[in-house]
Image (cartoon, rainbow, N blue to C red; front, top):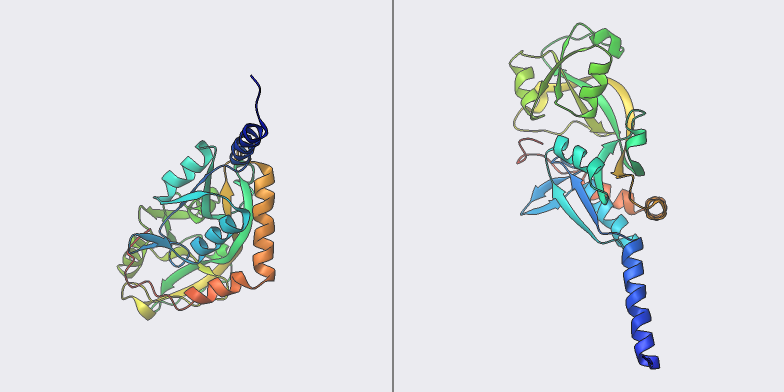
Length: 251
């Protein structure tokens, strides 16, 4: 069979398209409802973390789909599915070998929240050892505190902890705030709940399955660096800095 130049060119173009698609897989991006990083609004996943990840995909020419799922399910799937990535994920020594990491896309402080009408004397996390600490079942703060022998009382929905705290069923609530941000008003508890101790600063990342090509991970990390240099990260953060969680009831 003799091919003319047009046929050869068509075959080469088709092969190139296949090869490029093979090198840059379509990623399944997963996240939870965790305002203002990620949340559902009018049927669309939005948020500062979402906008940053979408920008990373655009700059690297990576096809993607976003799923909003319960955290524990998304965390498990990100380790099982070869083209899956999970955001916004805290990077810890225990998790380090489980994923390939892109970021950080944001920074956060781990805090203990307490009732404004109660006096606490907490200078270090160790001072809270006798307290009942409310956590979100399966999240990184739950794992961190359990591993260190603290009295953890976990909930299947993180916002349940606000009610548990106000009802006296827990003494403090382990949560996270974006670094240098103030506590938002949520679900009417306003100034009734306040930070009483900041005990750890962390970075949050896009955590990808180990099968995601390292070349793509490098490109995505380069995109994050460029976004920081050109002001995109700050622009996205400013877009959501006044966002108030008056509709979201859980994560």
